[in-house]
Length: 195
Ligand code: AMP
Image 1: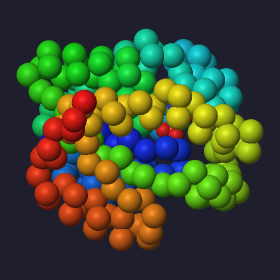
Image 2: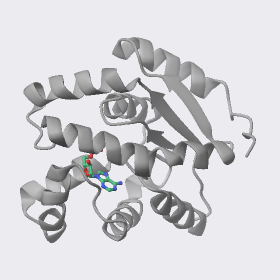
Image 3: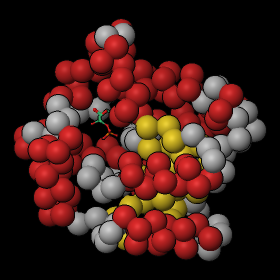
Image 4: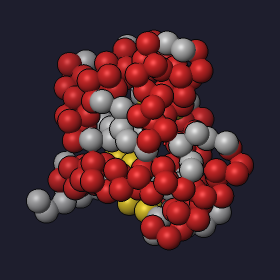
């Protein structure tokens, strides 16, 4: 099972992606976590990503595509994955299709966790205090949401047109959303959207 998680920052997709990956027994591939690890380790990628991440912008597509291409060759990803945080642009989504098609695989389902903007801002402001993420300052939070709307939100239509999209209401407790997500995935392949 190859699952992609979409959803704005603060939608809870990281939590749900981890839980789903455990259930499916596939790796949870979270590009934000990979980048934060690279920054801590001081690798060349970390050096290039640090300031971009702190500003709330996206790390350039070529770096991200190379990172994911390499990660998907690891043996643990041979039978599936949950992707959390990739793709974030249409170019990344097209690259992902090419990488998977090259291995006679494809994305099976794309989950979009939908959460209203005001709730996202509240959640992200709360997280700044709890998790000490360098990119959770107020200015960065607003920038990340703006970047999400401009660059990542178009992926909802991209995957809807491919008949892969499942929309899940992201308001509620973690167990409630997990259950909703489980039900949405159990419904089988969604109908192909009207372009
Ligand atoms: P996340 O933990 O998914 O919210 O990611 C944190 C930050 O890492 C983002 O705000 C981006 O700066 C960067 N990042 C993570 N994944 C990607 C990606 N697929 N493309 C570009 N930048 C990314």
